[in-house]
Image (cartoon, rainbow, N blue to C red; front, top):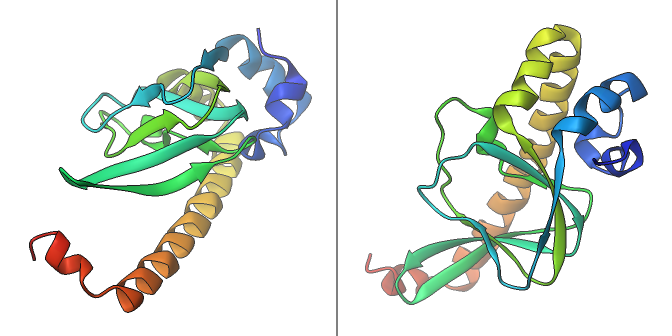
Length: 160
């Protein structure tokens, strides 16, 4: 079983009460990963939510057979696999360990059940999720605009 201290180190869970963390802890499993181990791939069912405990995870997308880009590098304390919090979702990217890593895993359905049981908690967690995703979107948008400005030939590589 995962400790409350492990959960408290996850940015998303940092502000939750001990009571809520104690409720979550038995549902969270720890998994060890080897370097370059695939966690999920595009089209796979998004039914598990992940947080990185140790190591580094890369989110990647294959734009063309010869062009794979890194979307994000997940650091310890941060979460990924957000699609697990949506009904019947599938992943749109790859997630793979960049080095030997350890992840915390919870069923998306079980996590949502806890949030549905306590609407105030559900609202607080979803508000934090919205803030995290907004920051990531802003970062990626700025990154995308810099790349397009500096490398207009990318369209040619993609067959546009």
